[in-house]
Image (cartoon, rainbow, N blue to C red; front, top):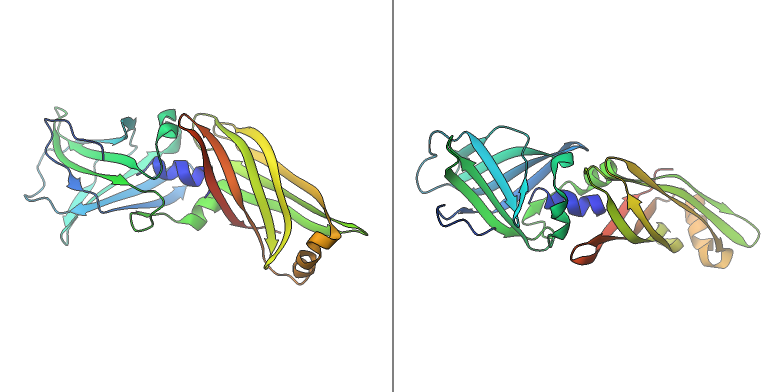
Length: 261
């Protein structure tokens, strides 16, 4: 998944509770949807509390590995069928840059429902592995559609080489820039590879789409099978890695998307 697939889920996905807070309910599942490319809608599911919901819950707080994530909607907690559900929206522009320092394979999460004095009435927590679909349900196709596209794609054969052209667009919904140290791309048509290339680093500007031009001549002998598949109308797919700079070192984010012709 693109940057945005990895950062976006970080922004939604057990921190140790303070001594004054009762042990959190164990988070069983995180479900994420995308009502727009600027907003994530998140549902946390946990077992029902040993006693009923406390009255007077008026606000909420989400903390990821010590990073406070502002929430954009009022408290919405229900208990039914033996499960507790906490639903909320996250505006991605409100997510702080500190999420870049989190390990996406071990994201400490703590959600708290608070009373008017700021005391915790209910908590849900766990350490989440963002790469485990059993823990985090994410509409991957929707994520790529919102944040990464490859357009203007053409494969043009010549006498000795094939020109592969396309425009890769990556949208950064956050309020901070993100640095990519490099991007590795492979374009396949059917089962045939027509292009394998690496591009140098670039900056994904906050709140903007950044374009990466793919325009390369490939020896005809290396791409002939792919050209034939392309001319037969077989689907083209872009795969690769977007390598991001973080406070913990470079992290590779997988790319996989269909090509818009």
